[in-house]
Length: 80
Picture 1: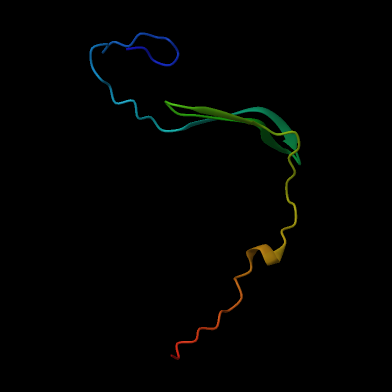
Picture 2 (picture 1 turned 90 degrees about the horizontal axis):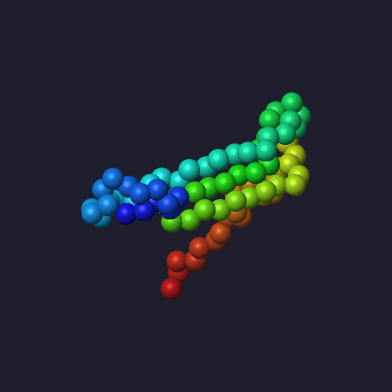
């Protein structure tokens, strides 16, 4: 059996359980507001890989309170 990187595994005759967790790798760190921040993030599991590259990262941006507000109260009518 061959692993995705082409390396032959020792249990070639066995059907191995290939369930692995997701591995997340952060790369290309730059200092923003005195804090190292990754600008490239890769997520890999046995069957897939994805990569994200960021061109701009900002810290401590104000949040709009309306985004976190509870939904308005709903009125229920149980009368038939």
